[in-house]
Length: 286
Image 1 (spheres, rainbow, N blue to C red):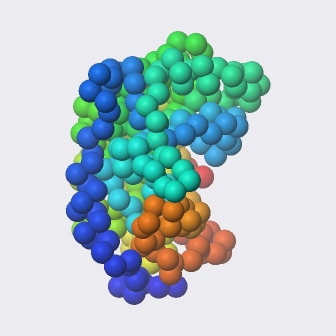
Image 2: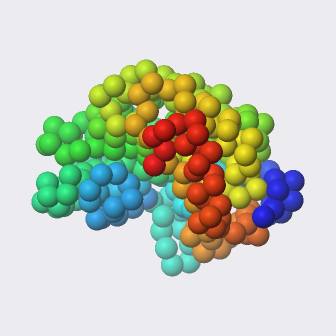
């Protein structure tokens, strides 16, 4: 296993982050209402990994972070992107999305599933996200978000009243390493995690740690993450998820180098060791 110091990053990664971090503001045609329309990457149906039961997942486009292990690089830019054979992104309305979401209502009813919004980072389009979640909940559809909580809390507040489940990533406890590997430090993220916790009494609140070999899988980092999670009062559980390289081909299609090409997925044994460290702090590790 490689240490952080041994990781070989793709050439030009720092320059890439500096350039694309400017795209944190959503790019939509000027005549579109940002509460009623959003930039959407795609929809996925019958997901079982993005919340309870069978879920329809709406992937939003645009994210301020540039995590080196991102599995959906096509979701990072707020702009529509084109490759030789593919187009990533389209402007859709709440009504258009709800028409698609309703098609799976029978599965939500029988499985306890619902709608999950993901990304990218849905909070980049918080007004639109709130409107979509509000409409879904008004129709009795369970709602969830997958978020990095990396934007100002005023964005987070817009969606909180319309959520049943929150999945929030916590990627590293060290601010400098977080900035190195994700493009920004973690001050806003950690503060938002605490502030959401204070309001999550009626929300199923789950933190996720993506375990990246050589970046956040050492004992000191995991103990730090576990100790932070142990401070929270309304946390349902902590999930430790294994690193994978499923997005590598998309980087190629976009003409970009994958920064962690030499990093391999952790073994089941190593995953269990890491989960045990988190469990030593938080009994609700899952």
